[in-house]
Amino acid sequence: MAIMPDLQKITVDDLTPFFPNTRGVSIKMLRLDKVHEIISGNKWFKLKYNLEAALKSGHPQVITFGGAFSNHLIATAAAAANAGLQAVGIVRGLHAKENYTQTLKACEAYGMKLHFVSRQAYSQKRDNHYLAELINFFGKSFIIPEGGDNEEGCNGASEIVPFIPEHTTTVCLPVGTGATFTGIRNGLPLHQKMIGFPAIKDGAYLKEEISLKLSLPSPRHWELNTDWSFGGFAKSTPELRSFLQSFYTKTLIQLDLVYTGKMMAGVAFMLQHDKFAEEEQVLCIHTGGLQGNPVGLF
Ligand SMILES: *Cc1c(COP(=O)(O)O)cnc(C)c1O
Image (cartoon, rainbow, N blue to C red):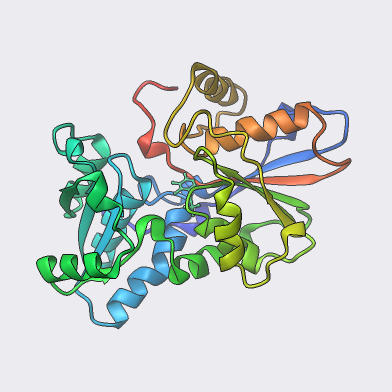
């Protein structure tokens, strides 16, 4: 399936009828999940300039990093194949090899070479010596950091901004590495505020990471709501699942358990508890990730 993501498919859906509230707050959703089944949502934007940089600098191969359910890993596998680049995926945890997930099988189907390493080895993913070792072993390669979290990734994410309607007052977005958040914040006019919802436990440290990467550190224009990790990265609860199911029944939009479901649970709570100002025009970004959902969720 070597088809390119199709940005024409992106829509803005009005969810306000499903979230009646007394403050006149409107809720819309930017459907980045529609760009491609596998190269979902924000991942294409973050990969775009990474792959371009690899090609321009004459690298035949990219190396990147992810866990056994990683949306980034599978997106890289598919997008690299599209671009005619070879790809190596460094997979976190030796146990992942014994228990191949659908995500990892699909990565291999796209031609990605998988290399399983211990959690301890994986933690060196930003260490230059370790990266040099990997290149030495796998041959000339362009390194794409975990999650596409580098300058190229942020620059690509800035290109999401033109899809955000001008009348939006607040943009809500799930946060992993923060690269997408950073890229959008760097490109978004300052009068439009952003709220990020970290998908990991204790996501407060991301505030500093994001501040460092922003071209204009202006905390007044953005905040992180760290109350919605549901126990930690890739963890879920029966409440979260039932939220996703009822959201789907109402809107016919599928969310994922790792990122977008957590953000929307947070947004629904904020609406119910009058945390948005009167007449706010809220835009929630659906960043995709549906490939990682368990079979039978909906
Ligand atoms: C990767 C991913 C994110 C997180 O993006 P970052 O740029 O790492 O913050 C959010 N949502 C989905 C569905 C993702 O796959």
